[in-house]
Image 1: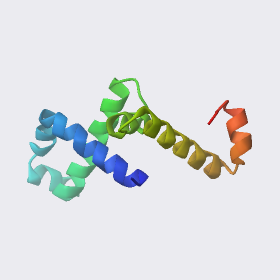
Image 2 (image 1 turned 135 degrees about the horizontal axis):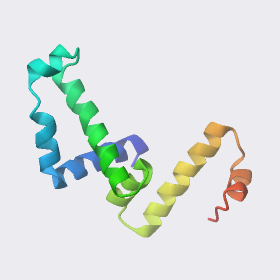
Image 3 (image 1 turned 180 degrees about the vertical axis):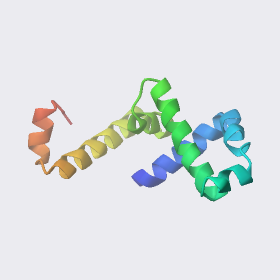
Length: 108
C-alpha cells in the first residue's frame, strides 16, 4: 500500500471507529464554512486531518506511527513501513542509507 493511500485509509478507519468526531466536523454549517472562503469539502478534509493529528498526539504518537499502528496487519509489516519512512527521511536529507542507519542505530 502506497504511503498516501495508507494515510487516507488510516483516517477512514479512525473516523469509522470514532463517528462522533466526524459528526462534529459535519455539524459546522455550509454558510459558516463558505464565509471563511472554503468549500464544504475543503473544510471537512482539512478538519479530518486536524482531528486525526490531534488523536495521534493524544496517544503520544507521531502521525506516521499512528498510521502504522492503525493499518499494519502484523509487526513485521509495521517494521517494513517504519524502515520505508526512515529511508525517505534519509533520501530527503541526502544521506546515504547505510550512513543514516549507523547514525540512527537502525538495524534491519
